[in-house]
Amino acid sequence: MNQERKAELLIVTGMSGAGRSTVGNALEDLGWYVVDNLPPQMLGPISDLFSLAKYPRPKLAVVMDVRGGEFFGDLHDSLQSLRQTSVNMRLLFLEATDSALVKRFENVRRPHPLQSDGTILDGITAERNRLLSIRETADVIIDTSDLNIHQLSNKISDSFSLEQSKKLQVTVMSFGFKYGLPADADNVADMRFLPNPFWDESLRPFTGEDRAVSNFVLGAEGAEEFVENYLAALKPVLRGYTQENKRYATIAIGCTGGKHRSVATARKIATELAKLDFVAVSLKHRDLGRE
Image (cartoon, rainbow, N blue to C red; front, side, top):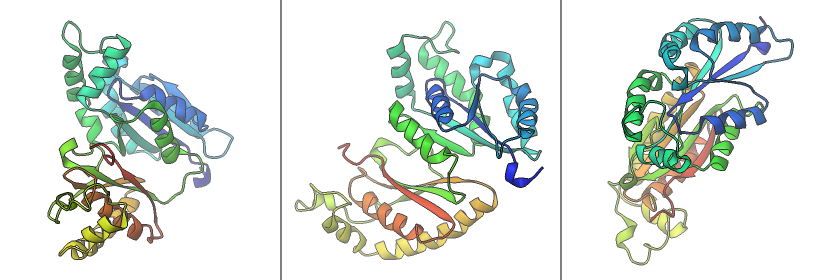
């Protein structure tokens, strides 16, 4: 089959309550053909069917989850089998914190599919354990804990638009360690070794996006050396991602609260990475304004 018309298969799975329905709707709006709750055993046949489509580069998204009961247990083996074929397959895993998932189930007043006679949290724990091997093989992990349905839809649009760039999609994300590590980070850097502008009363109200704070952070001893060395280390990693057909990467830059040091450094790193001809860079400040 001509490479220009090679079918693309996106498997969407993850935690119940993490936004699979929202993602499915967003993909349909983008022109993908979406199949919900397909048994894993049907992945091979349906991907073969789509490879015969008469229109260019068909796009098929399959949403799969624990509603499949005993059929879902075969998902890992089915995915491994597909990866051995010529199918252009990607796996998107949707993640969220326990507290976010519990709140969502309580809001809709529905039980978790696996909670049985236990609590919602019991069901979430059982599902995490069941999905561990699937999560480890995911091509893209999206943490939806702090995303509303509109923000999640926009993120899917940015990542899976039919006109999406063939470049490696790199998100540089600042964050605060006190709010937890980003679940979808591929690389994490810790900027807490730099002096904290928080302790300077003239800088405290501002953020790393303000010039005074940025100059303070990036002008500190060791900051320039770190940025240069970190970029030098990242470049072969990102090239390796493209060679292994990994299309998305998240570079997480952290400090204590995600307001000063991580924000200034993340912007600097994003600016430098954007100069590479094989990546498309976006910048996100996860915890800015949260304090």
